[in-house]
Image (cartoon, rainbow, N blue to C red; front, top):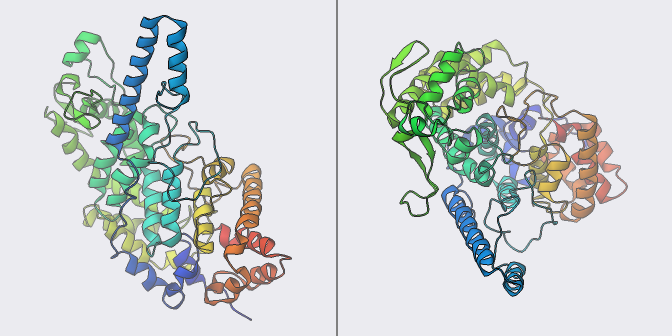
Amino acid sequence: MTMSRNLAFSNAVGRFGLGCGAIDLPAVDDPRGYVRAQLDMPLTAPDAKLMSSSDQLQAMMHRRQVARKRREAMADAGSGNAMVKQGGAMQDGSMAMEPRAEPSMGGGMMENEPEAKVTQGPLTKGSDELIAWLRLAAVTKAPLHERLFLHWSNHFTVGVGKGKSSLTAGSYQREAIRPFILGRFHDMAKAAILHASMLYYLDNASSVGPDSKVGRIKKSGLNENLGREVLELHTLGVDGGYSQADVTALASVLTGWTVDLKPQSETFGEVVFRERQHQPGPKTILGKRYAEAGADEFLTVLTDLARHPSTARYVTRRMARAFVSEKVSDLLQNSLAKVFRESDGDLKAVTAALVQSDEAWTAAPVKLRPPIEFLAATARMIGRVPLRPSPVASLLAMGQPFLAAPSPKGWAEEDDAWVTSDGIKSRIDWAQQCATLNADHVDIRKVVDDRIGGYFSDETRRVIRQGESPEQALALLMLSPEFQRR
């Protein structure tokens, strides 16, 4: 059967989606319409089984209280029998000593599908979060939403390698990113920057104004991490025209925003503003003087930052490069920035402009999929989440540990960022293991000859058909250029 590769179809399900599966058949006849229609689809609600950030923080503090009381009781008892009894309590799970690493960020494994055992540590957390997302990615009729979710989660990165941030990194994405992917940039920025996970990740929860009531008593210091990254990575960009003085001033504006971890408090586990930690007095940022206004200070500053021309340029340039290529034209970047400015940061309008641009449809797929998209594309192709090999361990092996970007800048977005010798070898190993364990769930030869076969070139289809077994055919498909790049 002869079939030319359909570039528009490939870009519809690859560039603006998570790969090609039977569920993507509507994209064959009308690729652009298929993507545009997703802009009007409702957002998928997060899995109700996964814990909220406040619940996770409350549970953490409860575990610590229990552990502390048990240790105190053991010390007071001072007898061997007491030690034995307490040890037994630990064995049967009734006692939780303060762990080396917090447990998984979800609410327990879902359904009855066991995942391969993975030792929990800073780089192997979030199994429940990851599997829940992969299940959604495998069947969603709005894969564009999930591409946007991944992009904006990377733009406003938090990670599991840093204290309490690791506990809430998954819920952070559900609470601060997902609801706003087609909303206003300002609203997403506010939700992300003032989320517990971000406040912990960039050390703002412990930042204290030197001249505040707390600062004068404890001589606590100002931490500039969040102020710097808000300007450099979240809004204006590194070339956005700000100075070190602006970083310090914004860090001062952000003092007081922290997380309430007092069990007796009505706001236990929630983000709060504490006036006693806030640096008093006016602040000047980008030449504008802001009067002292407590919690409203940052909200006023953020409104101005979100509307700044540098923010429009930086945010849309990063988005265009993430979706199309790092060599995206000035024409496309400028047109997206204009839409951003004129719509007051309406991300739905900006996304629509990107989807409607000819460049996004004529540019060849050149970006190597990040490992998490490789897993999602595989799940979408075979119609189920491959739980073996373990998704969390697989991402770690391929160099993209879940929720553990190497810096606040997030994962690299260059076209060939994932082209490394170790990375490619890990992809090959994973594809072969996955194909061996999952080939019986899909007829790959039928797939490449079906209507969605236009996703692949004639040469790729020929190679897949020549696979000596279903397992080899699936592995060849997963490692094909069309499957690997978008």
